[in-house]
Length: 247
Image (cartoon, rainbow, N blue to C red; front, top):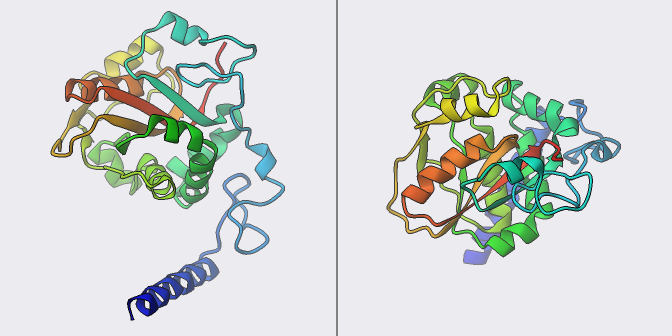
C-alpha cells in the first residue's frame, strides 16, 4: 500500500510539472527563447556557449588560469578566510544569463544551473564532505523587491542532487550593502563589514559550503566565512556559479 501511494505521488508530481511546462514554457538560460525540443532545459545549440572552468585553475579560489600555477595573482596577494572554492562557468560567457536570473525574474534558470553545478562540481563536493550548504543571503529589503534569492535557489537544487542539507535561514544579511560590481577591493571590504550575522546556530556544523552566484574578489565569501569561523565552524568552502579569470 505504501509503495502504491509513493507511485501515485510521483506520477502526480510529474503531471503537475508537465502541466506547468505547457502553461509556462521553459526558457533557455542562454538565449532566453522557449526551449526546443519540449522538455529540455537548454537549447542543444546553446549549451556550448557556456564555458566550464577547466584546468588550470587557482587551487585556492578556483579562478581559471592562463598557465599552470598554484595560485592566481589575487590569492598570492590576499589572504582569504575561506579554505577553498570552485566555480562552474567562466564569467564572461555566463554573465548575461546570471543577470537575467537575478534581475529579470528568470528564477527558473536556477534548476538548470543547479543541476549542472551538482554534476560538474560533484568531485569537489564529495571531497569536502560538507555538513550543509549555506546560500549567501539577500537583505530583507532586496529580497522583498526581487521576490527570491538566486543563491538560495541554486543551493536547493545542488543540495537535492548531492544529498546535502541546505540551511537558508542560519545566516542573515543585516546590512543592505550597495552594489559591489563597481567597487574596488578595499571599498568592497568596507561595504561588507558586519553585513552578516548567524541567526540560528542550534545545528552542530564542522564543514560548510557557501553558495553564491558570482565570485570576483572574494570579499563577500570572506566576510561570510569570517562570521562562520567566529561561530565555531572551522572549515568553510564555497561554490559559485561563475567567476572571473585569474592571472
